[in-house]
Image (cartoon, rainbow, N blue to C red; front, side, top):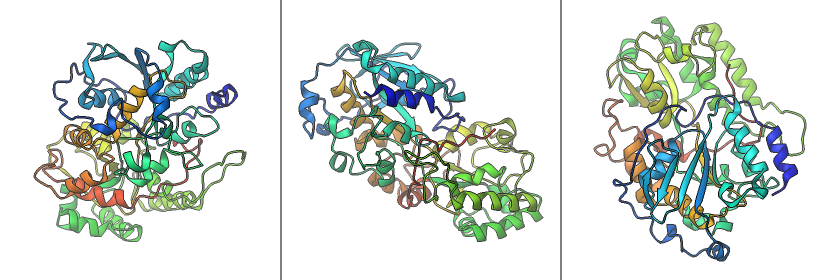
Length: 443
């Protein structure tokens, strides 16, 4: 562990917004694992063989697994599908495994960069920490994952050092998620159970009023690209509606298309890609034309939340699966079935929580086992999809879900199978070049 590099990480904590795969705050505390029926299988067994497995097999495992995250989402998923779980404490801070090992959940909020600050402090002390105090697993978001997968920093272990072969064990993952979790040399240093393709989510009543139909296929034709979308926005304005709530709503679609990182390693000059300048000019055009609500400033604020209510004149939002479940649904005050999904004007990804094995962990076998159980086991991923309505990082099962309307209807979307629209978007996502300075903050 290079303390100088870790000190640099500590100094480069990027100001955090609250955009996350799920929101911080109270979450259900689950005790026990009685519903977890999936078996990790040979690839996820703690004694499984693989490249680098000798080092894993020879390591003496500690009795405390410290996991750093910003909310209880990952804890819930582990409790739901990891077969070694026995029970979890009533306050949710400790999960007990069947052999007596304890998972300690160290949760700090994303707001104001608190999570990254606390994590960076722990990483700075990792080399000298007592065994039971070492970070074993930590999570990062797509917005700042590059900061932690940096090869020189060496805070996230290469998966091959754990005995995980990404080409074999993670073959069913979407390619862009593997690239996102890799360093500049192409070495994968993390894995995720999530894939976060985004769609256009629209109000059925507004669609009927303006277009005479709320059919997702027909609405999809009216929003299929930006030129068509602009013409559709003019129709919406004539009827007194906004297309989107805020200029911030479209940013990620442009931001996902940049051709160069904001700043490369060793550079001191921030580079603004032409796609970002296109977003600036297009946003001004749309604001001046009245297609966006000028009173809604950014996202993750009260005005933005109210734009999702039944009193709002906003036609659509751009959300991944977690955005519908964690953001739109809680802010909607009407009946289920009022919203539907269709294709976006441009493929994009929003979010994703990456699991990293921390360099210096004294629990490499369990860390390997947890990563494989959560991100490589098809049955576990299917259970997460069914129980939490997540679009998971398993191409084959998501393609199957897209074809199975009976098994995957959304109550909130009036029985619509959203995976039918998510799956094609996921296949076409090409992740923009990342840097440690790429996090977006709306204020």
